Length: 274
Image (tube, rainbow, N blue to C red; front, top):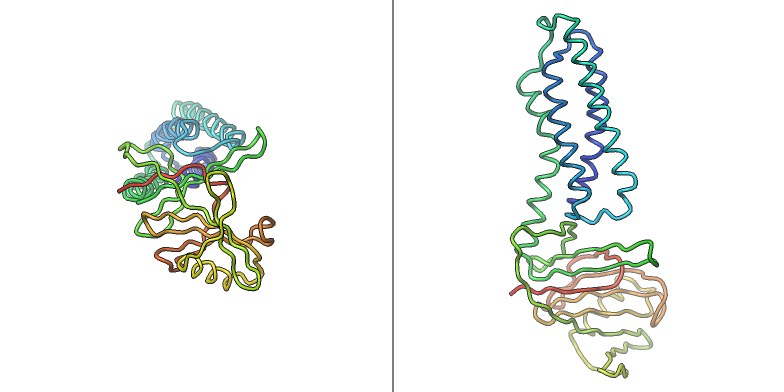
């Protein structure tokens, strides 16, 4: 949500820079107020540039197109300022259709609103969640994408904020891993410290695995990450018994299905908050 807002602001700044440029050449435009707005948006440009490069969210290779767009916006703003200064010297800008105070304020705070609402929301989630799960998708040395899932009020929430202002301290914890094979019945297994396969009987895991199978009948296998402190399980359904295409991913709390989710890559770290 926050990542999308930061990206959206980059394009808003570009669109507004073009809008201001067109307004300059319209008759009876309030050039002085437009100049003030452009100066405000130049400041927004610097802030946007900082947010894209500060690792507040994971932008990765997206910077390749985000930064040029920011630079183009900045150049257009500077050119607009120069054009306004020249026109003000030549023209009497006293008789013009001035911007209303309401429109002026709205135009001034659009990028702030777009950023601040998702930022406060994700900051709240990070500081009130029970678990924070980090997934990482690695594609050679070229691509490395992180996905964060916060579990708050026993529900999963996808977040993109990577820097917590309040430095909330959590505990490292391990999940229990189960492998599921849907044969004539159901086989539940885990691995010991030496990676030996151990068949287990667990009615709670069995109940969730069978429920997931009903939601995705073509699945032949699954694997489960179970967090015992919170009675939380994430089940991934596979097209084959031990591998294959991922068919679905479901979140369960206290043996009850909550919702379908979408993570990216393997579970890299788990932070538990009491």
